[in-house]
Each structure stands twice: as C-alpha cells, then as structure tokens.
Image (cartoon, rainbow, N blue to C red; front, side):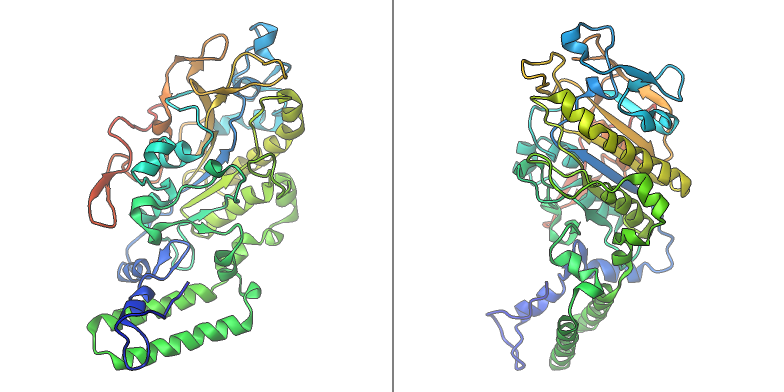
Length: 443
C-alpha cells in the first residue's frame, strides 16, 4: 500500500524524501511502478502471451490409484481400483477418472518423476529446489521469475496471480519472490487487500476519494521539489492509479460472467479446506483460465488434500470424481478457446505414495517416484512418458527429474531455464541448475 509518511528529511509540505521514494515502489501484487514505466517505454514492441496454470495437489496424490495402476501386483500393492482404457490406445488410468480418460489425447502423463524429497511442502514444485535450500538461498517462486523476466502483458493485469489460500500446514503455502524482491511477488487474489484493489465495487467511495487526494498531495510535492526524476515518477504514479481503478481483473475473477454451461462443466466445488491442505474449489480452475485470457502469465492454484495415510480408497472415491471433472474441464476449455498452443497446464504434488498399503488402508509418503499431468503449451501430448517397476515404487524407464518439469514450463514460455536473473543487489543467479533441461519428448 502507499505510504507517504516517514521520519526523515521532511520537505516543507511535510512529506519526507524517504517516504516519497516508497511511492516509486508501489506494487499491486507484483505490478510495481518501475515495471509500468518500463512497459510504457516498450510500447509498440510485440509482447507474446504464453502462460502457465499450475495446479498443486497438496499432500501428494497416490499415483498407483490414479495414473499408474498396477493391476498385476499383489493385493496389498494394487489396491481397490481397476484400470480403464482411454481414448489413446495402450494407455489406461484409474476407473475413477472417466472424464480424463476421454480426453487423454490432450494430455501427457508423466509416470517417472524423481529427485523429490520426503517433505510436505510446495517449495520443490514452486521454486525447483528443496524447501531448506530454497529458504536458505532465498529462491523465488517460479511465477515471480516469470514476472521478472517477461513483465506484464497488460498493465492493468498482474503477470503472476497466486490463488493459493492460506493453508493450516504452513509449508504447503506459496513461496515468495525471494531474492527478486517484493516488486515481483504474486498478486494474492484469494482475499485481503489485493483482492479489494481489483474490485471497484468492493472498495468504498471514501477510499477512492482518499487515493485521489493522495495523488493531489503528490502533485503538490512535485511542485516543491526540482528533481528530474519526479517527472517520471508522476507518470508512473498516474499509471498506477489507472491500475487501481481498473476492473479488468475483477471481471476475470467473476465466474458469474461465464456461460453457465461452462461453469457447470467445471463443477463448482467448495472453498472449504480439506484436512490441513487446500479446498477442492473448481471455480478457481475456471478463474485461472479467465485470468490467463485476461493477460496473466502465471496462475497457481492449490487443489485438494491427498495425504491419505488412512482411508486412502474411501478418500479417493469421495474426491477423485470432482478432480476428474475439474481437471478435464480445464484442459478441454483451453483447447476449445484456442489456447492450447500458448497455455501450459501442469498438475502435480510434492511426492507419490507408498506401494504397500498400510494397516489403516492408507498409503504413506513416497519420494522415490511421482507422477504429473501436463497439457497445452504446444507440447506433444497424447502420450505416457516414463514407467515405474511392477510395484510402482521406482522409475523403471525415462526418469524425469522434477526440475526438468519446471524447465519444460519455462521453455514453453520462451524462458531459458538455465539463464541468469539478477537479485536486488544486481548479482546474477541461475533460474535452474544447468542439469535441468526441458523434457525432450514433450518439446
């Protein structure tokens, strides 16, 4: 938020230089004034609009019961579900996923993701590094990297929108902008002031009057200071005011504007959290699509709770049908709207589940191998990449490091995953290690 109050070097109008400089760092969820100024300077330059929607499955989904069934394994391994054929000959998935089975030609199923640690957190998925390393080295969320490298498509739409709610288990929650700084943090539109800033109807007239008064005060300050930088700052500030009063993002968030048949296709779900993880709120999947259409480059969604140490099969019976409906609708929608060449969809969690079913009819944490779904992004879909052994415990062919998954996302957006980005001190940092490469069979 704006802050024109400060303790040092007050000018004759009572506004401090220190506080004035804070205006230059005004940000609405990562859309900072300096970014806006650069955008204006780049006017006329063609800006592509590649985008990504990441769906994070908090808790870790059982791969053996969804996309990598082992029907020939012993009963204590194979579980209670049977495989069903899909539209792609030779590919089968779990019986609770019939909608996804009908559009597997639009998906790439990754069955051999390796390199993950046994840690209940989103950090590996979101930063490309284990949580301890990411926190120690201040690694940024991949959406912040995208925002830093590519900037906004539309000056009134944040390039990076994070729909993660605040979850009870803290490590599930989103990573921040890290060494990139607050100018590139996510716009958190799941509640709070950022959300209010995108909805004119949610912000009272008195607050807008206050913002206009603040602009007038800025004009008064400008007249009192003879500094060339102020001219540019005024342009940035006025442009930021346009952002604050635009309703483009609000319209994208308003699923009531969507064709009722499309919204029904997604299934609404509920904003109620499951366990200590995320809700299964399918409206957010639809909102993600609407946001990328409006101009967002990255939208991250936390979806469901899959930490099934007990009652695994009952939990999946209750919740996989809504997952099936929502994920299939998102991918189908991306194609129907002609976005499949530009918008990448990635669905995954922090690890897999144990091959052996425990005494509580559950599956425990299993880091050695995991799976994921990818769609869109102009990728070569309609295929399975990698396999696990007969018990589903280890990669048997084509091991895919989890950093390679993020490298593929960066590649699809036109970003070199091994390039350097500078931190706030101007020091170069690699986005991902040189060992991380896009998945060849996809790109």
